[in-house]
Length: 161
Image 1 (cartoon, rainbow, N blue to C red):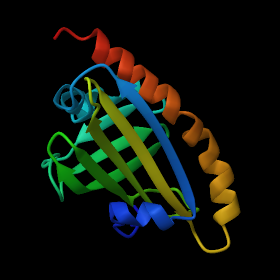
Image 2 (image 1 turned 90 degrees about the vertical axis):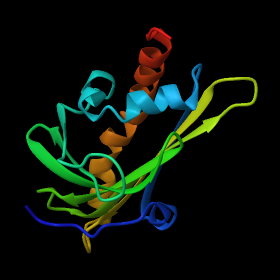
Image 3 (image 1 turned 45 degrees about the horizontal axis):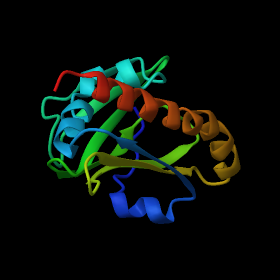
């Protein structure tokens, strides 16, 4: 499987393609954290994903997971892990021919008065001379982020306290 460079979360700010979605959830950051760090359950709320397989070490910086979006498998490595607040990962292996690099970041912030703001950011870079094609290919994935977060909100808010 081709490898991609490990990009840190700060790289997203300067990535050629940036996608960002934010949602407010009526739950504490710790409650939301429990749901989003249950990697195997991601396909239940993130419709684009067919399967998420936690690696042997699936938490903390250096942890890994494998995401399956049929027919593709993507290897990810966690680059940030602040319990209850933030995690980020980089795509480190895929068979996506036009992808040079990608990183994603999920940040949780307590809202004054209650609740949690979830900000999900993606940064993507196409291979040389394929940037425009990569942007075109990434657009459907980007459109799936808002509905995924809405499903996460519904899932978290419906869960027993």
